[in-house]
Length: 239
Image (cartoon, rainbow, N blue to C red; front, side, top):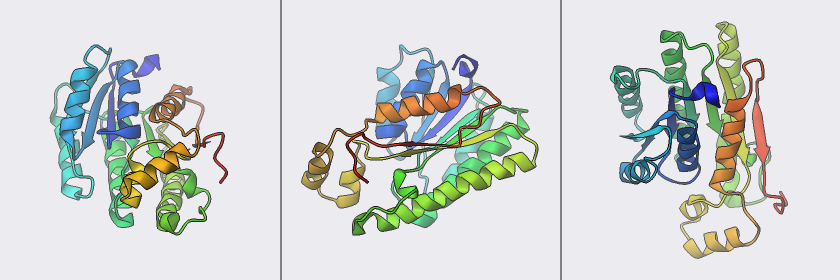
């Protein structure tokens, strides 16, 4: 991770869970991390709590359902003398409708690649947080629609990979597909705190830090190695 020290990472959905854990790991590697989310107050708390780490966390309020918010954020990064560019983009989009989730992911990826090209960054990296549900449809009515969006995300990973190859760029596009991770996700999906707690207590779940370490592994690969997707599930998870 030494080559990333002092460079700029954008982490979407950095106010909790996997996004927050990834932001911290990148700070530990010495990166300047723009953490964006609607709940900027949580990111500001993390910035204060982690201020002794080698890197720096810069909170930015952005609603990923708003195309203009995303465009404004990339302009702000470009105009900021401390930042100026994006070397790494972690697309950690949270729950949303399928259209806005995929639109946000595509726009963040597009603008990140444009930033890298404008600044002659040929070793940039984009990581899309997908799901095991993008590789199989769980036998549960509650997750079938969600699964469809993640199948689309996995298609986009390959589509963007092909796009950067076509422009003869060494920018890499990778995915991370977790199984059951103990975050706020289950409660947000079910709207039932007790049901979510029961699910997380049913097995020894993955933790957000496990996913952050997987991202670290992806970013640590040498330039000639393309890690396309990592599938990670709890040892006890059946499906």
